[in-house]
Amino acid sequence: MGRYVIRRLLQFIPTVLGTMFLLHYLTSLAIQFSGNPVRALFGDRTPPPALLEAITERLGYGDPCLDQKGNPCFGMFLDRLQGIFLNFDFGINLRQREVTDLVADAIPFTLKLLLIAIVFEAVVGIAAGVLAGLRGGSFADYTVKISTVFVISVPIFVLGLIVREFVGVKFGNVLRGQSWIPDVISTGMFSPGFKPDYPWASLIIPGMVLGATSLAVTARLTRTSIMENIRADYVRTAKAKGLTTKRVIGVHTLRNSLIPVITFLGVDIGAAMAGAVVTETIFNVPGIGRLVTMSARTGESSVVIGVVTMLVLVVLIANLLVDLLYAVLDPRIRYE
Image (cartoon, rainbow, N blue to C red; front, side, top):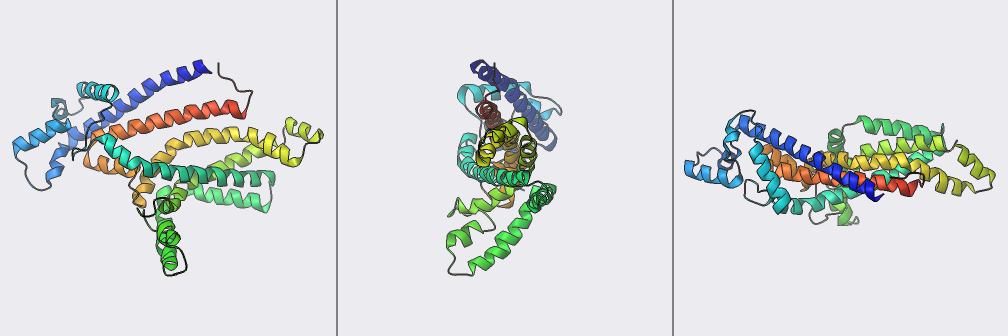
């Protein structure tokens, strides 16, 4: 097990370096073709050349390679690596705030949003999948299959806009007109956007939107896995030995059926972070996703590279933890 963990940690190195270089090259190309992003700070005004040059150098956009279209700027990339890995310095944005400070301010909101989404998709998705798998061909099974296909087919930005309009605005206005309903529900939970006064309640609806598609996939995976395992020889043997149905399903069948589901949930962490970009923008959540979106619009390459690098590390570590969890769910799985 220890060797496996070390081997996986070593595999992180080329993945992180490759991601960082790809982001560096793309952001460099954007600057080479669109021009110095520092000019955006002055709007329509023409800045004094000395001031423009000073700010450009301060923000790290003064390298001559940025004037040559297609140049990968290897020197800038090596300097950035040195700053990140030796000094944990991800640079600053156009307003000269440290990227680490920006991430520290934004990440709590994204973590809360992801936690709500993952709990929602795991609990409801697995429960729906177990119900459909144990009652194959029933009304419950057809309901789960039809509803999950519908949810999967709707893009997250469309679902988010629909939910915000009908749940946050229309239904929320009805609730806000009732004096007997607590503010945490009417103003917090059913608000059309994030409310700083209700940091958890106002993230429940965005979190459910973020986890809706994954919930549908989780339910279908669980259903298929349950239906396969319930016909397995070990289940018939357990029943022949006189074990109760509750123990056969809850301990033996469900435990083996969760392995593909855990795989999906681990991989889905990266997809959820990508979906957070859309969800946070729609519901005005001041998290990592909106930070990346705003930074990409203004050409703040240091912010984009720093944030995405941190997210890549989080996804890699999450996938490693999922692999280690396999051995807990199924003792037959061993890593040599």
